[in-house]
Amino acid sequence: MISFRPTKQSDYKLLSRWRNDPGSLKNKGPNKPCTEEANFTHFDRVRDSHWIARHNGTVIGGILLQNRGHGYLGIPWSIGTEMRGLGMGKEMVCAAVKAFPGAKKARIKKDNIASLKCAEAAGYIKVDEDDEYITLVWEAA
Ligand SMILES: CC(C)(COP(=O)(O)OP(=O)(O)OC[C@H]1O[C@@H](n2cnc3c(N)ncnc32)[C@H](O)[C@@H]1OP(=O)(O)O)[C@@H](O)C(=O)NCCC(=O)NCCS
Image: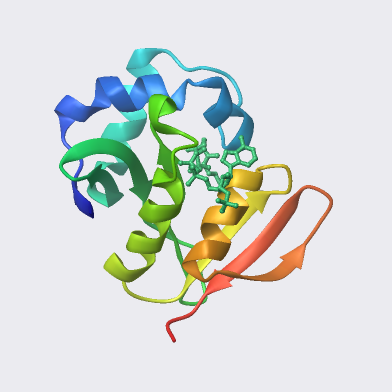
């Protein structure tokens, strides 16, 4: 079962490692690895909006709550490097859309098939695309 808890300073080291993982860098900013210090500054800045996801109590990933304008919430998601490809992303995104209320919007690189599949499994619907990105929205049923 997936649960979410607030992010703590003691999570930063793990989150920093995940943030510098090549898979994360390719799919979301920044594009280059950051120093641990810069990543800690980043997590300090976003900590109040950042949530840690756990699967049966084990930390598996994180999401960030962002205002995307026009009443839409962004919930950019990441699964920890070692836990990718095991179905955790799909489970986490399906749980997150319910745990954090309101309409949501996501902008996902076209080649990020795993993330697109997570969004679609959670009920996001494609509304737009450009050369590089697909935009999807999630509205409560
Ligand atoms: C994107 C991410 C959250 C997906 O989580 P995950 O746990 O790896 O994905 P899952 O194991 O739940 O797989 C979801 C689907 O994608 C498929 N998939 C997983 N990894 C894949 C890959 N590398 N290439 C293509 N498909 C892949 C799975 O087979 C599954 O397909 P299905 O629905 O047909 O069964 C995770 O890979 C991640 O954190 N990546 C780096 C950060 C990132 O890209 N965040 C999203 C930015 S928009």
